[in-house]
Length: 341
Image (tube, rainbow, N blue to C red; front, side, top):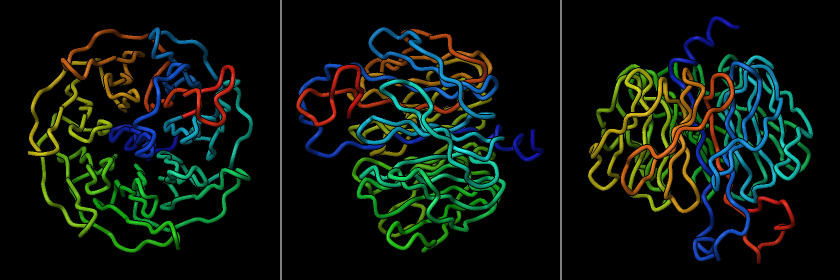
């Protein structure tokens, strides 16, 4: 294992969920349940959880030390970063088989898909760069130089900008998706690891692991508008689909801080497992799934009561997580066994 990976493990990983279009919010209930894809860093696998039964339905072999997971908006493919393999595994969610492996930069960690599903952005921690993958060809089309130790990555809902945390530079790089160039760099807290964009695209929440806090960035001005105290070593972050709350995992605390995005204050703290990493929500926002790296489990939180309702055993060292949006009967591509949007 590379020496710098230890620092990456401290900051942790979460992968933002691709946001559905406004029209999708009024779709009929899903005919196929959503599935959670969990990267298990220690045994080189991805566990697939049915959110209907909260059981692991299959385990997929991927590359060396998988960390990040992102799913295309149509739900048909999952992209998994292999940190020691310098590659990304592409999983067909209909067959749950790896269809191709894409070489990227040195030490890939974070991964995010554009809302139109055409491109995947991958942070290369050891290469101080971001690889851009075309989902049509599954090849890297460009490489963007960013700050020192790029880690987390998120795309705005309009698809116009990509935000990247630079863990070793205490900053966030902002990339224009039109030019694939960095347009500005924002100083944030100490040891930024992960970030998530609100559904309305107005704010970015950044976890600062070494600072035990969360920076809130206005996307209009690209400046910090608030700093929120969190738990010990804040790590993963995700925003509820309605945009009202941010859930932040705290590694050393074994907890999740729930932030009211209107007041930017922590309203409750939820006890989960040991070393909680990423966090992702079901499409309706009713449940949050949190991988606990040292317990080899995933905690399921009822977001109405903010209590853990069940704990699911997965692979060795669960870290990154992403959840499909389920399959809706009138959306194109929703066939038998599909996951669709």
